[in-house]
Length: 485
Image (cartoon, rainbow, N blue to C red; front, side, top):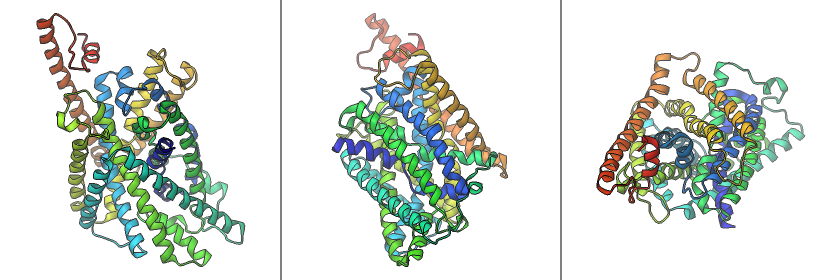
């Protein structure tokens, strides 16, 4: 049962984030409900099938993403995809940590205490240090935390849905009436950009794959678990988005405390203490956000640093502890986030501005790793469909057609997110495109430099030994394929 718990609750904790319901409601209103449902059917379910197929084809993979990309795209692009998966999550931490602090203040005080951006950054650094330490303790720790997160969030969600349905079944008129007109999305450039937020909310399946080897029953059980979790999470997002404005109108919700605000609105309707309800919800959400952050603190590091070729980084940086986590790499990640928090704290006039900057950086760039996975899947079904595996997303042509549609949707949505309407296009280019392009180029240069160095070393050994293999390098076979050696 413990292995199944890690699989299901790990998937749940990595993907379902209740703040996504409020964030997207603030941007899209009640139309976020059908869009969430559409995103589940059009994106998340097929994407889960893609992940499941890669897992089935790479049974011995410790974490997943690098091995998934390596065969169809080659070692350089596999490294770049893995690097970007880790890199874009650095910005996500900056947007999440202020939420964790807000929920902590609700838990302790019953209301949100407003800190200055610099104080918020300092508290965030302490919280992220604690999350980094705990996340290096392996799946046993994370399994227990994920179980608490999953049950707590599910209970909170069920209480709100029950309360909202009870109120609607009585004489209560929703603060924002649930009508077809309100639920009908307006399709424009801004909506297409915000779709990235929806896709990001539905993402996380690849993160749960980092704990495949900790699931009892192996990859077959993992496939069943992640598909079940994906369908349930999509349904919960859609239902929650439909009922989010029963007690509080969209205009009154805030990014930092929105989830608590809808519960205090429900408490007011039922004649309960708003302070006590705010504290109770704050406690659950603090644990949920902190638990989710620990899943995301560990998984990208594990995915990127545990399976890249030996020698790309220093041996101590990639060395795994007894729990299979590269501890030094996790603390290097902490250093990067530390610097970003300090810079963002000094450069922002308010916490809301801090969050807006981080969200803008995260929304579009977060779509890059899934696009790498999708392109890899297209090539995999095109050129390597004979690879033995127990699970396939339909026939070869069907799989290629489905992923082609997903890639097209993502490219349009990413473009709209990178260049939103009504903003300075030069500034948008610098923040949303240029920075990521620069770091991507540096990463590609780094791996190219490593491969050329390894190729020279390979050539020297060939002359000495008369053969083309290096017993000490598992990388050599892939490198020979890439360089023609």
